[in-house]
Image 1 (cartoon, protein in one colour):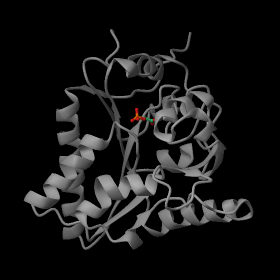
Image 2 (cartoon, protein in one colour; image 1 turned 45 degrees about the vertical axis):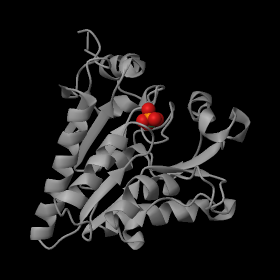
Image 3 (cartoon, rainbow, N blue to C red; image 1 turned 90 degrees about the vertical axis):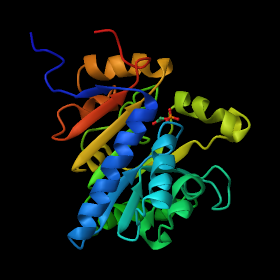
Image 4 (cartoon, protein in one colour; image 1 turned 90 degrees about the horizontal axis):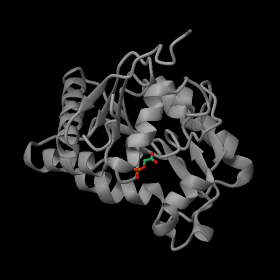
Length: 254
Ligand code: PGA
């Protein structure tokens, strides 16, 4: 019988604080190495609760270790559709608050799908996003969380391995998880734009974070279940340079 663990997903078990420090240090080294080579460092970035400590650590490195973001280009994984640009729950607002403004990132280098694209323009907007990633030289390091339904970005269950940046309908469990931020489920957007699975897998390095007991079951399934669209996080297995950081609470019993 073919094993469902035919491809590997290396796991590092450590505290959430240590993982954030380790990933922020790796990002800082990447930025400095690219600078020495006269190039930009291209980062793929998530929102949510999980990456906050990494962003705090990067802000700290900027303030106290002179980490310079002038050669950094970022592409966010996703954005809600149907929110006015000034809406407090846009991912652009989140990124400005938690990272961009604090490290002085040039807004021209901070790519996030627009939350207010007209329906007729969405496809072109997604194509342009893919082109911008290519024009930047591809993503050097993609930081990722895992949703409790196994989504990566907003690639919900059902997403194909070869999917690219596109409009998606959010899973009900995802909308449920966002409810508190929007003052009720009825106000959570139904649609979003997300990088595709193939867009994510094209990154040269992928660093995934999952912390707390609430993530243990999805981490277990990501490691154990067959690779495929039922659980998009399983597509990460077998990437040439992927690492999953979990804390003791999120680590499934082996
Ligand atoms: P979280 O979200 O970091 O808020 O748990 C993870 C995700 O949905 O990808």
